Image 1: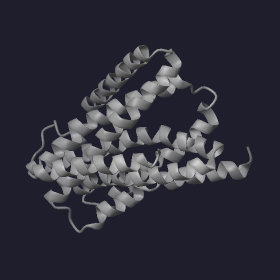
Image 2: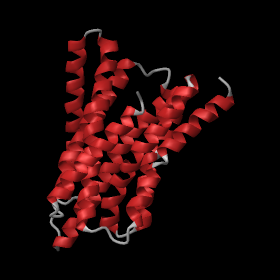
Image 3: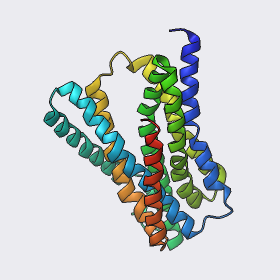
Image 4: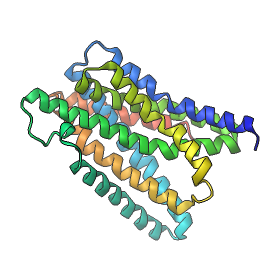
Length: 265
């Protein structure tokens, strides 16, 4: 393995990870997001996260657990346990969120309460997507080292479906902070988890990672993303009063992710 191959693989990961910046730029490009745009964008984010959790991440986790446990039934039970463990973890974190960004804490005005909830939604979304992007970056890096002809279309596909992820982070944070710059950089940082995952995986984790570790991780991440979609994104979208926009966004998010995942096949 030479330095050129490593640099090529890492450049693919950097390209796919930083595409969240494109989504962030699209989200902050509008002068002021109205309730219809907010509802649709948050719904789209929920659709992306729900679809990828149930159709890609959880099945991939169970598949990896099957290699570790040897039987489909044991792998499925292990995946289910890890899935709900992920939900429990993020629920505990939810209750421990500092008061300044927790909408359950009393607010002096309705607008302040709205901003708190949007801030929490954006931060949690960035956290969930960073967790998702971390192993994704390592996987892309490995494919770049082993088979560049396969890694390039994979990186492009990941880049495409990272764009709505950037929107998912930037939209609520822009509305909460009023700052386009902060929203854009939060979206960018969530995507930087991919190259970080590649570096850490290559330097430290590669000798120790096996099917069981990856399987439990994927299933737990799926649970975290589902919880955030149902507890944060969709309720916040509904609060705009634009119910149908939110639902259309969910369907569009699922469709976008379905098409982007087909590029892997």
